[in-house]
Image: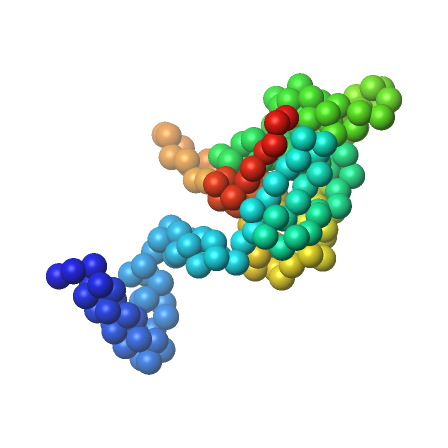
Length: 187
């Protein structure tokens, strides 16, 4: 069977399950990881490349729009872009130096003490600053595009289940934008 024939067969079977109102079986057959991969493939045609210019402007190249963010938001965004595997908010202190570096680059005119104070707030697990910054980033992207496309650009939740003698969960925050759509110019 050729790939084209297999695709026609999958479509025929999927339509049968949909007609029988058995989306549950269709989802079980496809599986969530494959569904997410298909979702990314479907969105690729609608997603814009994100260009981060040498002067730290964030530009959605294909939409001809600039993402207007404050330096602190840019620093947070750059940190999460640099970690496609995701980061846990409660462990941001482990990335304090990296975050400080991004913040110093994006806020060249800001006093170093203010930058240090901002980094301390962002990396303190008892402070809500990181949630506030992520909410602001989300709002900026939602103001520029629909929720479906914005979901790839924002910092969102992803939970990983681990089993190593016991079960534990890693509550990661990630930017799901495929990294081949991100271009960083001469930083």
